[in-house]
Amino acid sequence: GAVVSQHPSWVICKSGTSVKIECRSLDFQATTMFWYRQFPKQSLMLMATSNEGSKATYEQGVEKDKFLINHASLTLSTLTVTSAHPEDSSFYICSARTGGPYNEQFFGPGTRLTVL
Amino acid sequence: DAKTTQPPSMDCAEGRAANLPCNHSTISGNEYVYWYRQIHSQGPQYIIHGLKNNETNEMASLIITEDRKSSTLILPHATLRDTAVYYCIVSSNNDMRFGAGTRLTVKP
Image (cartoon, rainbow over all chains, first blue to last red):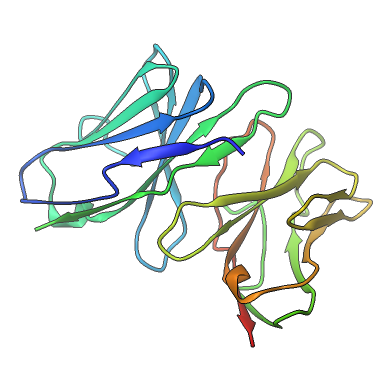
């Protein structure tokens, strides 16, 4: 299957700082990428849908000014958590859609963010 | 609101078939049934998907009822490495929204 990578795999930061997470589709072009958040012992929650070259579409309740998404190329989307606080500590997962006849969606390995 | 209903947990003996049910009684005609699994602290892994016909691949089989209101994922010979949370998702546009899933524990 197609490969999606995330960087970094884990990050620890101080409260009030910003953190950028990268999501890359390694062997295919992804016109659409998705960002999810997962708290301990909970399911994945869709945060936003990112389309290459256009503004991201955020789910209800997700602050677009806090979670900045940029999808500048067909293989890269970034999520920046601005002014992070301890309650933003979570597992952030991206996915990318392959397009084509099957339009499958593949997930990255996730990034664990801890805000102190 | 969840579109699917799955049992919260199931156990299976190693080497036996694991049959994971999913109810999706409000599924629309253009919605596919997808199955993913998530092993602890990893990203979800695609398993299989189908529209109305039964499907099989190297990982699993998917059985969809004729009325499409429910489906069953079958892992034919479960191993300890199949211990994971299994998610059943219905979607028409590949916008995957996850429910609570079924935590499958494969026991020796």
